[in-house]
Image (cartoon, rainbow, N blue to C red):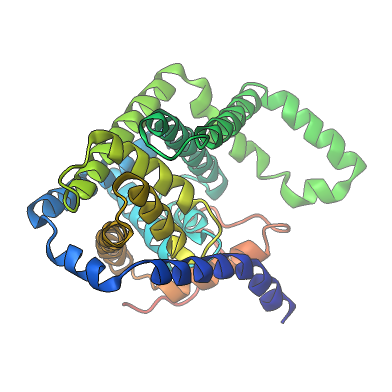
Length: 353
């Protein structure tokens, strides 16, 4: 019972933010105009946007596989990525990120704690790119004066985070020595993760390999460049007067909106961020909401389509994975998490979908 109450308290802020934003959106927009805008959209462009979205996902899987140092097959990496995205859309606390580390550890030689650092690096780098794109676009957007400071602040924080991870990776023996000294003084620290630290540092090694890191940054830049074009064309399907900078501003705002606490999948916050950004650009909040809703549908089609395929192929169920992730989370301060499909105490029955 205490565990349930604790989870409910953690969910409450995001729930309230999402509900408030949804109510505000419904109050300020004319849903009839929104529906007409969806009907009048350029569906040829939307089909192209959908195709670009699928291509973007294939490239993003390649980006993650670089961080994993190609130690898992591309098929497993891609399907696991899609399973994680789907889980993020329906489960709280962004469990999809933990979920994809857990799922990939069951179908590859990689350990759970080796995969987690690659996801951290990926997400921190995403924040850095989104901040850079947002800062670049803001000066061209009327009425957004001063918002660039947010982008600079977030960009600075994530760069410091990457530097800290790099220093840990380069000085792993020093960090391990400090950890062991602290463990002798406070044994609870050692029991909490002493046998996981080596694997965690192993996952950070990509930061110390110049060739690997260069390939990662190049593919990440390509991935974000594709996203800019995709968001520009998405806006153009509803606003023929849209300019390329619209794609940059919309993408940057969406990235920050998705980081705000909310219900699973950024319900309310993502729509609010996209609608607000497009309203600044077009002064048409009802059509701006239409863009956000169509974007939501396209994302659901791809993530759920590939994600459900992956789960059915592997004999998994969403409820089964959720139960395992809850067990994994509850014992994160004690025993080490499972590291492979052949050695896990979190196995449960997985009926076919």
